[in-house]
Image 1 (cartoon, rainbow, N blue to C red):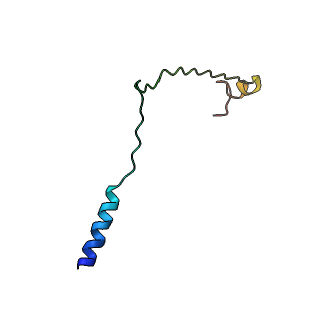
Image 2 (cartoon, rainbow, N blue to C red):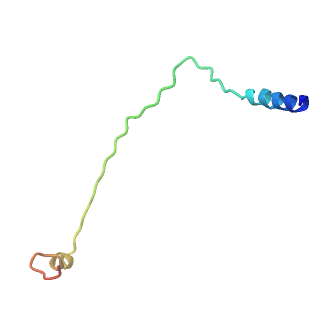
Image 3 (cartoon, helix red, strand yellow):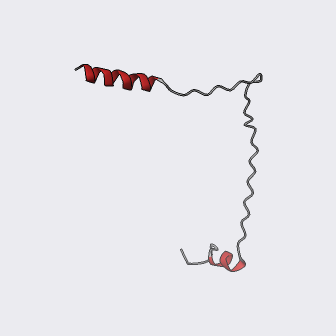
Length: 60
């Protein structure tokens, strides 16, 4: 039993040692999220396709 308790305590002790990273800075970290998104959608319909899909067409 003592061997199991020793192994268990060693595993718990090693698990408690987690690496930490500290950043030493005088200014706070700022993240700029000002994003400008511009969409341009260009649709060109060929004259032939326009005639096919016209209301006078019996396609549909």
